[in-house]
Image (tube, rainbow, N blue to C red; front, side, top):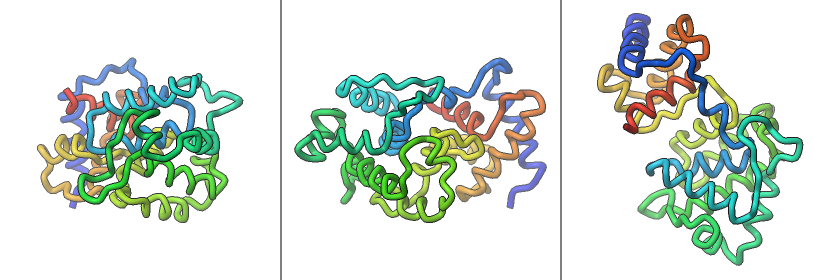
Length: 231
């Protein structure tokens, strides 16, 4: 069971190790302003080097000649339906994965589906709920129902992808409890054994650090840890 002292110690550890720049902004604020791009990034990022994910999203954007801003949501956002329409331009999801995304990764090495297929299924779920844009997603009233359907897509039951999707879409209070975050926290606090423990550690540490670093949020601290571990 984690306690206040643990959170304070972890905040001190983060400040010492991460060498936080007070002037730095959360880079997640500048992710592509498009829900399907967030879906692609979240799905393809699980278990791989992020450079591969960047190549995949770039391949999609370039193939269809899209212009998707990172700073301000455009009046005509690239929507869930736009994404599904683009997939239909390929004769099969296998063709879309290979010839458009240049990425045939699967959600699991054993009985996994193509990550491109997972993206398609998630987009179909979103469209069924009339969730087309980032705003639709963040402000959707029946999150429990939507989340349950997304978690049922093959390879997504852990919830890591879904948490990351919310982060990319604008939610600043969640973290992506992947292997980088786990290793960073558990190297100092091995009793943090669950995803909720990891979330609580970062959420409480972010609250403590915010007194010194006004831009700090759980999502931002998660990003700093991820960058540190990546190096």
